[in-house]
Image (cartoon, rainbow, N blue to C red; front, side, top):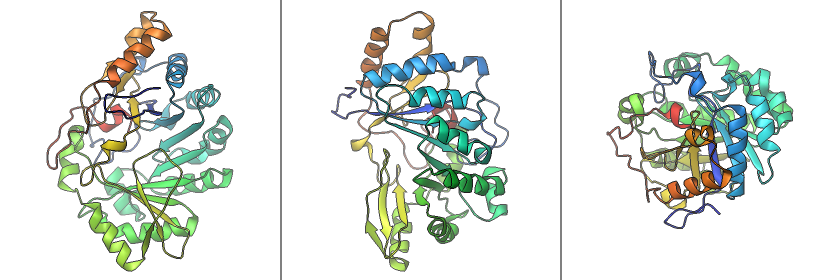
Length: 324
């Protein structure tokens, strides 16, 4: 069992397949960013498969494929299939911006991806482009393709930003209810070169929750997943809304995850610069036992809580290089 020094059990791995993305979301990768890793620095499919086996031996049963945009990696389907077939892995999911989802949804389902999160911050094409630099229509098509093949639950991740899309929450609620999607509202985090913009547009989601409670009526709910969201049913409907509040109400006491970057860097905490470089161990011929020992040792340095402070960028690495 993988456990940190505060007694928290870690059974969930977020695996970045690439730090590259075809969007430039203002809270993640600012326009003009050029600090991407060279592709030869990424873990190979074989190295990923081996590390997944090591984590499974340590009791990790849930894996989420992330990025950057994971569907930009050419061998994503082979990687997904290998992970789904790994003994001990019981839950394989994927986070995506949705731009490539329509053409991959059926193959992802066949490869073993059971559920999916799609980033969608606005339904107005102009607002969407101002946030992401991309086109809205392919994302909407991707959501319908994922629904058509049977993925469930399908969760929409909406990063709520004061002065930009805060006013559009209600329309996103209506959209999610109409199509049977779960909706998760997320606070911005001060990470990397986009951290300044994220801090300027931070909004306490408790204000949004209270607003929705007054107009719609919210009741506590449970939804299958491995993350930190607090979920609520919209009264008299099947809609579920989650609130992810790393800044206003941190959830570190129940943290059950670690992140593995595309380059093989293991991050025990999103809000800390601490990391363990696993790729050099693989290339030096380290045994699985040695790798397990190093992972367990790194977990003992996992902080009790993240170091994010409102208005302060505490991490130099970007969100895309960490794995979301």
